[in-house]
Length: 61
Image (cartoon, rainbow, N blue to C red; front, side, top):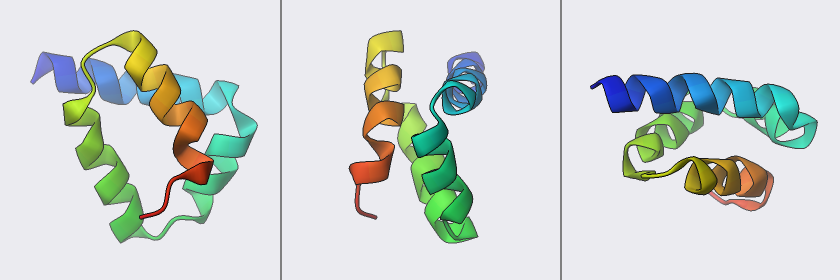
């Protein structure tokens, strides 16, 4: 559980540093946001998380 919490915190920090991804996330419905957050459990490294956030605007849900 600690790993997932760390991923969620880091996800928020990376969103703050990426205005395009943050804007995309802000436009998502609650269901889309939940789907995005559920995917964080599959991320196993900092570099994967950064790539996930960087590619968020181009991802289709």
